[in-house]
Image 1 (cartoon, rainbow, N blue to C red):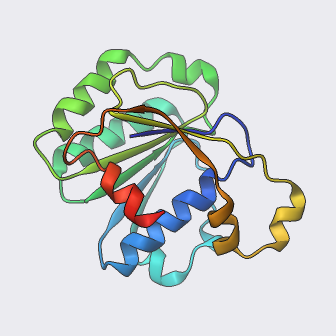
Image 2 (cartoon, rainbow, N blue to C red):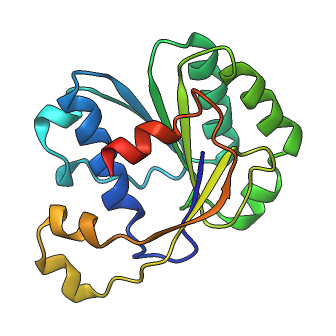
Image 3 (cartoon, rainbow, N blue to C red):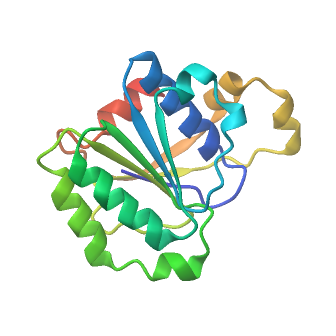
Length: 173
């Protein structure tokens, strides 16, 4: 599943935190492959962090390698690949064949890969969603749960196959 966040302050970080919190409440592990080392753990409750594997990468290439390894391992039910902070030049270097390779790894498993990107990147994404928000600085005064309720998502592509992880997002949102 690909979530496109075309501009900063669109709510992608709030959505990720909500997803991680939902997984922790279910006593399930999740992983964040942070492509630009931009995740702020201070905004996440300790209980949620105790169920999160955070992989800090400095480039999109390292993030893709980490994602490949974790998908092949298959022990985590949810992997979130955050490429929103990576420069466009790095993202253009990801070959489309890599996305198809990851898709083939995921298909026989129960693992969900949730990818955040600034532009559509994944040609084989079963589900592509786009964030429509543009929060202002005043939104920082609101509680995180309220901000999460205000996140607007538009479906761009929905070929939700069984086990694609789309069901997980709908239950957690």
